[in-house]
Each structure stands twice: as structure tokens, then as C-alpha cells.
Length: 323
Ligand SMILES: [Zn+2]
Image 1 (cartoon, protein in one colour):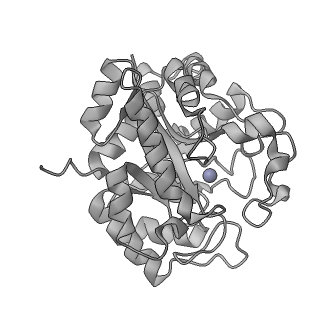
Image 2 (spheres, rainbow, N blue to C red):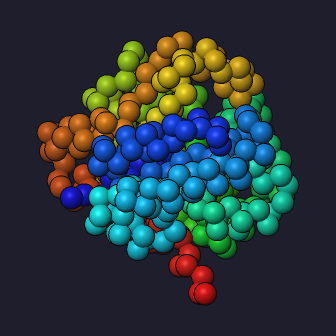
Image 3 (cartoon, helix red, strand yellow):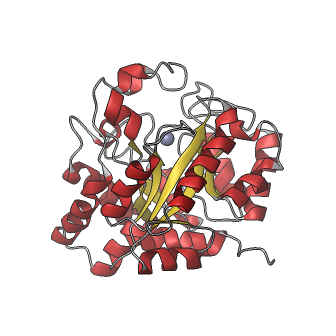
């Protein structure tokens, strides 16, 4: 069976949550082989990153029959062969580093495999996509990027300003991804990215992960057809080997509604109508079916579902340290 890799999921950032096993189980039951769990973003306290990584790691270790901590590409093969869910982590915004470049390798050791440098707004690494001035990377941002490339943590440019994204793409020695960004040519939303950015990402060997966030997909509730419009646009523009999946399913939003988020600065309500929908992991198989109906070949569909991200991991991740 094809590897399914959902490269971004938002389980509520509560280290003491008892719901984590059942939330992870939804991915496993949906046939997902690898999921990337967010452990921190710039709109919450940077103190959350380490306890969240530990909480997720503890949950995975308590359920070795169902979940696997993925550190290497070989771990993915093992997870897939035993129908278990492989878990990696991601960070949205470099504020979690607290100004310390050395935290990059610490997070990598804990399983963080991609990080985006800024989250919608400027931080000490560079500019965000909602800033008016489209500023680039700072000196510290360049240092962090260089360190990410050294340790094997994939740079991500979702939420990053256009100029900073261009600078990341020019400087990075690893493939660069947009982990969860849709195509602006299909639907004009501030968080969606230009054709130029999609092509530039592809030139690094990276992928654009298509998200299932209703307001970024199109008008009205999210649909399989709506998501497929973005998948097909990126594949037609940059090649099917440069499109992937980053649904960004958000359990908090689903359970409690967007009104509980009081984060106007990082996530202005102008970006999202109230009560919008996000595609859940249970619908991933419908995306594969839809691609087959549109005439995509099996190898291309497998690429979108997970093989393209496996290729990025094989190129970027460093092998396990000896001893
Ligand atoms: Zn995001």
C-alpha cells in the first residue's frame, strides 16, 4: 500500500492532555504512515515546545503497538510494514528557539524534522506573510537556516514573507518545502503562494504540501474537488513530484470552534470566516480516489500521498548518530 504522509497536524498544545492517543489513532485508522505534529508556533509561549515534544514522545512510547517515533527514513519503512503510525514533529516560527541557534540540534534530536522561520509576522529570524513591508531574513535568521541545513532539519516557508521565502530558497543547501500552502492562482488568499514561489520551491527538490483549510481552498465548505484543484495546479506547474499533503487538521478548531482563539495579531479574523471547515484525515483516501478519476497514474498519486516527502527526507535528514 502506498505511504500516506500528512506533513502537518495541530493537536492542542496541552502537555497534560489525555486525548493524545485517540487523536493520533485517527491518523493511524485513516491509513496514515507518517504524521508531523506541531509542537509550537509563534502565537503561543515558546516554553511549550519542549514539554509538547516530550508529551507526544511519551504517548508514542506508551503505545508501541500502534505508534512509532520516526528518526530516520528506515523508521518509516518499519512503521509502514507494521501498519503503525510514524510520528515526527514540526515548529511554526523560530521564536521557539529563544534566540539560541543551538536549540536547532536539540529539537532535531527530539524529532523535529521541519521548521518554518516565521509565523505570519516578523520575528527575530525575519518577516512574515502578513507584514506590510515584506522584509527578508535577519542575520540570526540566516544563522538558524545554516544550522538547520547542517543538522538536516528541512526549512519550510509557509507563513513566511515572500522576500524571506526567496532568501531561504536561495541560501538553503537542503530541499525547501511549503509544508501547508495552497496556490494563489487557484484561490486568492493571503496565505496562499504565487506560481513563482511554487516553481522556486520545486527547483530546490522540495514539495508544496496542500492543506485542507476551507478558506484557503476556496469558497464555502472544503471539498475533495476543491483540494484537488490545488494539487493539480501545483503538479501541472512544477511537476507531480513536487506536490504533497499537509492538511493542517486542527483538533481545537474542530472541537471548540474558532471563536476561542484570541490571537488577532497572528491570525486576524479577516483571514478566516467564523465556523470554517478543515478536511480531516479520514478524507485522504478520497483525495487518492479523486486523483485516479482525474487520470493521474498510480506512481504520481503515490508521490503526492507520501513518496515525494520520503524523497525530501532521504535527501535532507541526517542518518542516526552512531552510538
Ligand atoms: Zn500553519
